[in-house]
Length: 213
Image 1: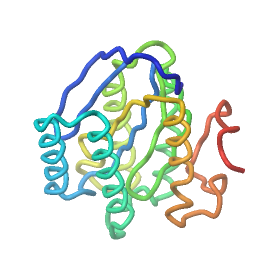
Image 2: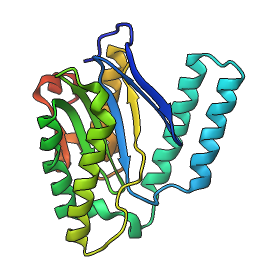
Image 3: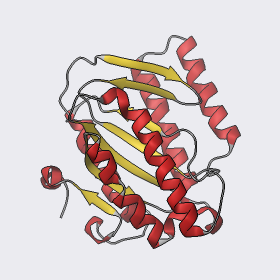
């Protein structure tokens, strides 16, 4: 899962966000609700990354910029008003978690997942060599859960943001720190005293030993 090896790139392209798919690696994915980030912030971050690339910045600088931007986005997502916190609905949160089974059926091992008020985090890896299907599989998952969520909430229109954040994990250390980040997120957000207390977190048995009690 977190093994370091040479990345065999399958696909790389950019919309508002970069998407880099590689073989035999885990992915850290964040799916957020529609309208939870101002377009100007997304555009500002995109421009910053482009400027770094054109100036010849190395991977370390690009990774640092991406981490800094992600921390800022997380803070914004956590501070949104109640109107956009659709995932606080227990029925919606339970449905989103239950439908992770569909992703497992597509070969994705879900090492960890947590549902928060405005977004969900996933740490996942395809065990059937189908990493190239990540974006398509996430797209189908989002489409299906959006329809169900809208029915539960009695609303219509887009539910999830069009793009999600997805980053492949380059090392064992990064895998472990990402795992801890995901499960401790509700604790950091003061939604639970311990990660095991949050009802909308799941952790695969294979990685339980890597987490605090």
